[in-house]
Length: 208
Image 1: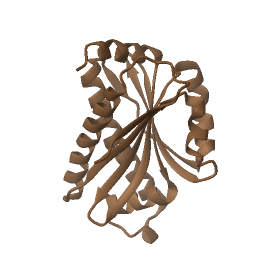
Image 2: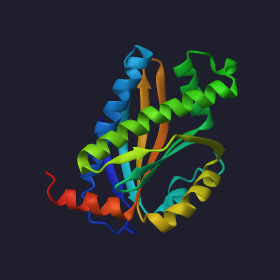
Image 3: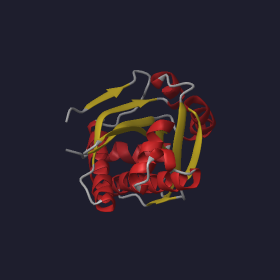
Image 4: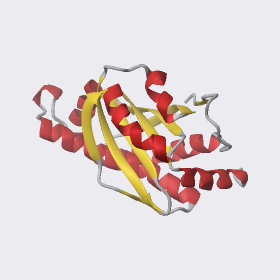
């Protein structure tokens, strides 16, 4: 698997970006194990690219402005805060829901699709949460997942209003869910609070 990290030049932080690659690999591995148990077949999740950039530059970075998108949002609270957004193009979300429910895409009803996507969000975000908590030793508790469907930019515009006050960093994991009959792509975005960024910075000083 080819993995790469990019850092926008406008991002001002001293966190070793290799940490995010490690956290991404651990989180993806944990999520893949859980999904494989559910599906009773081998599921792998690859994180080929990780990016960090200021939150307000995310829409321009992806240029998916009017693309219909489904997103699952969870907030991590506790000793430090972190918001997480898992995003799929609508057509990809439907493929995932069909995979999880074992029902053909054309036969899925909206309620079943929503339930499946929220469950996937619980699994994937929960796995990354565990990796982040284990690394930082910070107690993080997830809120229930919230799902929304809109254009890519409309989802981000409403979401980023809060981030402009709480976080100056977006950590973005491109993700690929792989199974025997094809791949599904998604985007996982973490917005650590400034307090959590400080914890990560301190951990990075002693990280090998």
